[in-house]
Image (cartoon, rainbow, N blue to C red; front, side, top):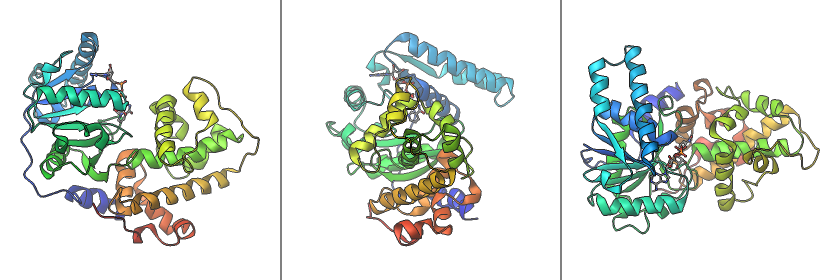
Length: 374
Ligand SMILES: NC(=O)c1ccc[n+]([C@@H]2O[C@H](COP(=O)([O-])OP(=O)(O)OC[C@H]3O[C@@H](n4cnc5c(N)ncnc54)[C@H](O)[C@@H]3O)[C@@H](O)[C@H]2O)c1
């Protein structure tokens, strides 16, 4: 019931979302045509039924994304989910190219280019040349500072983070990232668009890796530490699967890609070196190598499981105290909707509170903590 209340009531109400009139969105731009960009373009097409324009570095990349979208629409038609005429209509709404001018007239642009601050800043600066000052500039970054990304713009108040999860069609969460500059209308528009896309938004503060990736990375740091000390992948998988997760961490790592995971680890390491140590194993996996045993001192599966829970409790505490989320409940919503955490645990903080881990690590239940407002 706790979990149901989170995803059906709290997440729908939109805690912290300002009561401003959202802007109308009638033409959407997506920067990039890669793995996320094409899924986001398809989602926007299906749910909003407005023109969607894509830009990538080469026309081949744009064309490839367009054929992928056409293929997905065909598949939906074959399954009887949409009619043939609708599929043809939606296909006709997609266009794209390599020029920035394709975004002229867009009222909402979402970028999903490489996870590099320099590239993302350039993208926003180029966009600002061709769109109106009211056009929302959203980023799908998984770990970078949204504030920094918009810092040199003339209108940083229209910048907002919208962190979708892969696969986009399956995972309902969008972490909505407000920076100190983001204005109420921008946030209200991002919230409204999230709803129209039939996703659930959770407001989070602009902090490295936001909520889901930060917690999974903290969990990952316990796992790679065990691997660095001679545990096997089977053992670390079992230690985490006990939480009832839909996917073993080693499978998730393959899906995300060890290179990306290591990149996120480095970002978090820079922010909090003690809690996110670099790992010889992860460095090696990121370059196509095998796990590296630094010291042979393996732990039992029980010990690793306990260490994972304690690390999660500690990280959730930091997140709440920093005001990354308003309360522990938001951490739970994020993990249920963005990482497939099981409903029956009620979300991770509920589980940690109920099993006494929070008391041991934090000194009281996470549900009793509150952070800095805003
Ligand atoms: N892959 C995931 O699971 C995932 C999940 C959530 C968020 N994200 C975030 O989404 C973003 C994109 O990730 P991805 O996995 O789709 O990457 P990707 O490598 O599949 O796609 C990135 C695309 O951006 C293009 N690009 C680079 N510079 C560009 C520019 N200046 N203008 C236009 N296009 C440009 C590249 O050519 C490439 O096609 C990243 O910020 C990533 O952190 C990824």
